[in-house]
Image (cartoon, rainbow, N blue to C red; front, top):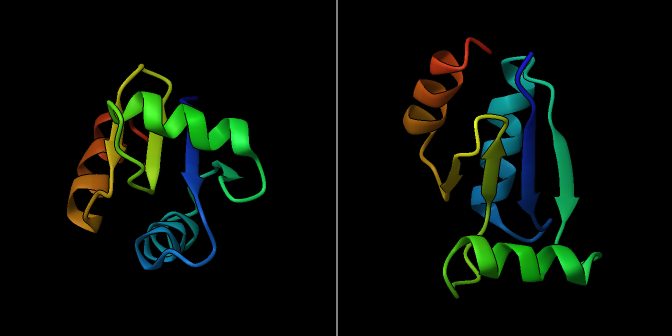
Length: 83
């Protein structure tokens, strides 16, 4: 089974929306709060080529989505057969 790792913050509306989407579709994921884990915040900047944009959702195939729409997130999860 593919794994999903989400970097986000509680104050972030897009993060809350992506969490809600994952939860409502029973997708297992690991959530990392970049406010609580400064090393995670550095990882986000590295993944995004210097940008601090969140959420960043990393997949087991080595790809990631930054600030994905629900439609894009759904398509990626279907590709990985998680939906």
